[in-house]
Length: 273
Ligand code: HPA
Image 1 (cartoon, rainbow, N blue to C red):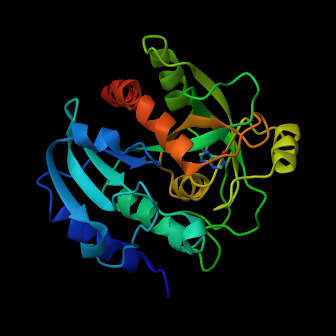
Image 2: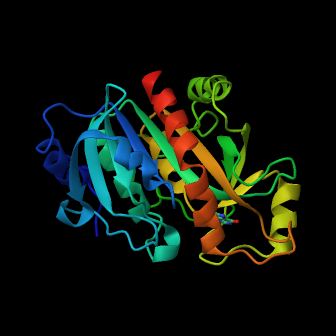
């Protein structure tokens, strides 16, 4: 498969025909964090299977549709259901959603994810504004021929998580009942949760939270110069912190428990972008 500019353009043109006015802000919802989608006004839902050249979501808790509409007066495009490496997609394929969102003309992207808390000062139910990430796996979504229309071969990652959006999210957290931190997201490929020894290593390396998504999207956004905010929901303490096995039920339960305030927080951020 050759990922040319036209390949992404076909998906974007299909979606643009579905909306009267193009969206301003893109949102990708993480596992169990789909509640936000119910807040979209005048929604137009497009199943991923209808979008040319798009991927299909297989993960539990991911609906698999693109929703166009408005939230707090802003035109949004929301991906209810994201794609992960553990589903079998390679890193190059994981660039597709963000490149398509970029071609819709959005001026900012918000990523949400469920993550395990590695930092011992965090608690389940807390939020982390991602300041940076660590991905020790070699592959990159930008591997292969560079698509020059999106960005240069070699690109900066120093301000991938846009400083002004991070500042905004931290300021707005003051009026939210949620406890919001800022920290480093450590990517692990999954689908297994980490071992306790891996979590100790991640902590020593500077990770505050661990998860199986987000970094490929952040790399793709950075490559094409798309301002980015990533919010991690601490759905559990990471492996080995508590003397209990990790389950996806626990992850979903915590995500569901905070969906109300989290959705309000994300809406408040959107209203200020
Ligand atoms: N590890 C990796 N991914 C996750 C976790 C975790 O503990 N919790 C939610 N997603």
